[in-house]
Each structure stands twice: as structure tokens, then as C-alpha cells.
Image 1 (cartoon, helix red, strand yellow):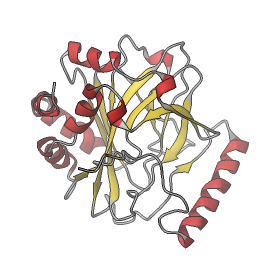
Image 2 (cartoon, rainbow, N blue to C red):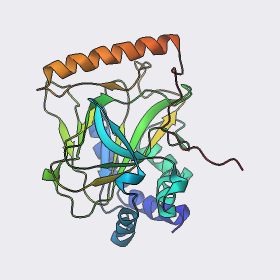
Image 3 (cartoon, rainbow, N blue to C red):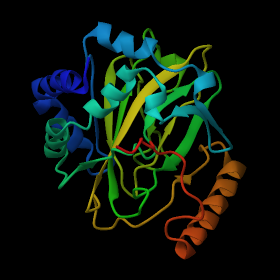
Image 4 (cartoon, one colour):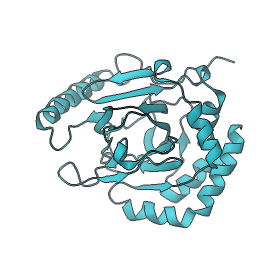
Length: 273
């Protein structure tokens, strides 16, 4: 399967459910806009993507107080189907349709996969509540949408690894979007888009294909530049204070060095033609 073939299938699925997901997004838009689509691809294709995911030994482990997960972004090192499915979501027809659904102007898919690509989480791994970095690697475009496609068969909600949207802040209950097999979840990203991934409670791996869309304009007029900013969960009072100090220190650095001190390694470095 080439990316164009994947894109054809995804595009038709979105068109078939356009009215439903548009209503879902706009109902939630005042807080943190989101929608999801189930059975995105024929099951055999979703299974093939899962089966060709790299092993944890072939991925990069990111482990700290903020997160514990495996990532992969150098797509030419892995099975070709993985690169094809990632870039299918960047098909101009799909980008335009999703932007229309979410009322986003001039959407731009991220060919460099800055913070995108593949992710995998196993037992006890997690992602703390956080705001994604507001911009792209060059600090020229605003991050506006997060696309997450889940491909682990027979995954259950109680296993964890689910997307959590803290639409009313950490003092109130979050919305949980189950990381169901063959489900695409799409979430708006702006200054209030606090989200997390619940800890895994299962001896298995939740696998995800992720993309971001950017724009020359932020989603909200009140949006401002920020680094990826982590928080503790409601019961993690001390950790929350530590992470807020860390956020402030990193923001201070970025005020001096606008593009950071070191190059972010989480980009797809393609071979020059």
C-alpha cells in the first residue's frame, strides 16, 4: 500500500462521517476541540501496520519525571508501510478536509515529523499532563492539531494508554478518549490544550502513529509562545511544583535562545536528493 492508497481510504471515511465529527468537534471547541473516527482503515491494513511496528530495541526511550515512552521518527529505518501511513495523513485532500471541519486557516502538515512519528508505551509507562510546544522547530508556525492513530489490536480501556483531555484544568475531571484499535483521535492544540496519556497497566504495548498540523496563525488570538509544559497529576502535588519550576526555567532559556540551545533530535532527517 502506498500513501495515496491509504489516503483514499482515510478520506472516504472522513467524508462518510463528516457531519458527526464536525458536530463533535464544534461541541467541544470552546474548551479543547476534539473528535475521533473508529474503524478508520480495513482491519487487515490496521493489523499490518501494527505487525510491522519496530520493537522497543529499535526505538528511542524517552524517560523522565515527565514521560516514559518509546518513539521513532527516522522512518527510512523501518518497514515502508509505516512511512506510508504517516504521510497519508499529510495528503493535501485530508489536510484540507480536516481543516474545514475544524475551521482552521491555511493548515500545513509537518513533513519533518517534529515530535510526531511513531510512539509505543508498555507497562507502567506514561505521559504527564502537558501543553505541546506551541510552535514548529523553527518557531515560524503555530501547532494547531494533533492526530493520533491507534493500531494495537484487542486493546482494552482498562489497560491504560488512553488520551486524557483536561478541558477544565487539573482540578476537574478529565475526558478520556480510549486508544481503541483502528481509531483516529484528533485534538486541537492551543494554550489551554492540557492533555496526557494514562499509565499503562498491562504487559503489552500500545502503539500509535502521530502527526501534527501547523498554521501561520494560532487557533486563538490569546495564544502565546510556550515550550512543552508538563504538570503533575492532581494527586502529585510535589511533582507538580517541580515540573512548574522546570517549565519556567526552560521558558527563560528560550527567551534568550529563541530556537533553543541544542537542536531537537525528534525530527525525520531525510537523505538529500
